[in-house]
Image 1: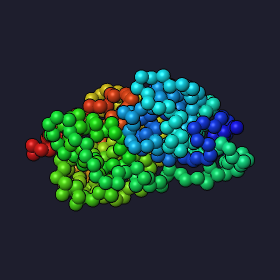
Image 2: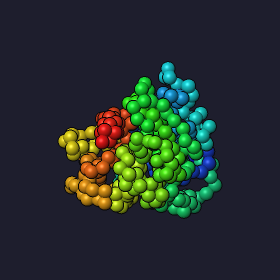
Image 3: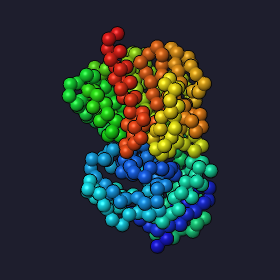
Length: 370
């Protein structure tokens, strides 16, 4: 049986069915990591996306419980060149294909994933469909892909957020109590805060500011997640209330975009997006380059050349993407709030930006002594 990967610009790649058969649609994105496919698959940021692995050999380390970033696999589809026929790792508990089938993920193998990635880097982000066992013609498949949902305008937070509050306790002595707004958070994030003495209360996207106030939290964390930040009006309003109350705020990825909108900036869809584990970012405050892990298709339209003014006082652009000049970090100078566009908790890596959790702790300490 032939399987087809169909892009909305009409380009079609042929391969073979893998994992589940059928049809699936999403935004085509690629991951450049040779490791970490389990963390990618279970990262809620990839909800409604079809992930293409550029490394040719995927699956040899299998899957295990400890490396899962959430309760399930979120990708809409999975594209590989050569899936491993065996699992060979002492930590493996299951095979990759078994987990994909369990989660109903339609996959395709035998695709020239590097050629596909180069095509996306040339043409930009687009919708994609995977078809296996389909009787549709090539033209009909293209039409069906073009009629599928776009990421622009997509509100996906309710799909991935926790339904009720739960707590990740601090390791050792509890130093601070933080509310983490779950917009599609990864398990590695509260682990990093917990290791620094923070008791993390994971709260739903529907949480109100009154609930934050009654919880007695020392700070607010805005997580990563999928979708278009322009649809997050209620969360933006919540963040503005927290800013008015001078509550310490740390946002990453989707949370960075939401903080940017709360400060009065627009967000926009990137033509290509930032994907993979080797994105170079200039830390303007420390004058050093950090290698980061990213997966986002939107960015904050802030002035990349320096400081800015908001209704909450002066602010500063702290990080810039060296590939395209996109703003990657924001900080208020008169209130305790900062954010970055990438993943400081990156699993399986890189870990250049892990210090940002220490910066959050320092901000909480400074706020507590005021």
